[in-house]
Image (cartoon, rainbow, N blue to C red):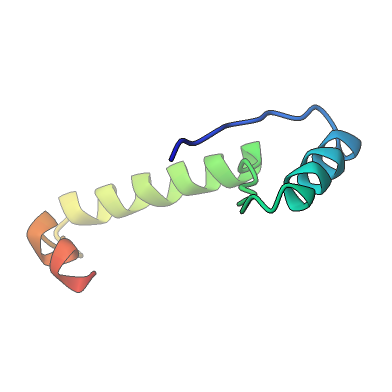
Length: 70
């Protein structure tokens, strides 16, 4: 099985592509790109958490602990 990535320019193209895939009985997952505001908010949150860690206010988990939660 292979993965195909399409980058439609507008909603009309999105609808056409999804309609075609549905007609072909191909499963399609739609992922929306984050907005600039969402990216900036995420960066700001990460910077705040790093600052809190450096100030000793929070303790970070090890990567192995995070993986065990999955």
